[in-house]
Image 1 (cartoon, rainbow, N blue to C red):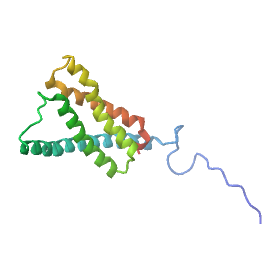
Image 2: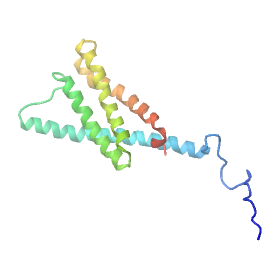
Image 3: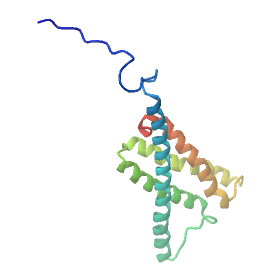
Length: 156
């Protein structure tokens, strides 16, 4: 009995031919679509966390006879908002099967803008009323950058 060497496949095989990156053009396009969908899902999870936990926080504070005003306590309001969004996003990421490292990185992206803006607030460079809006303006692109860091995880 003779053993024949395995025949090499030619370019006439079934299916698309992989490009230099090892992924077909359709796979790369699908990865970008999945990446964008995941980004939007995380933003939605953040909004849900912010609305639900924010309402719970305001309710508990109201029962205690106090409130958390973004105008009077912008630092606390910013940290509370970052926490609420992190909880919603972390819940969704863990449900989707992400590990703790990537989940905690993304949660860090919620807190870094607040911490970076606090000195500007204290120096009266920015107003307390604009703190939350500026925090979101920095947070969303930072979140995108964190996702790019792990693009294989978020894009497939």
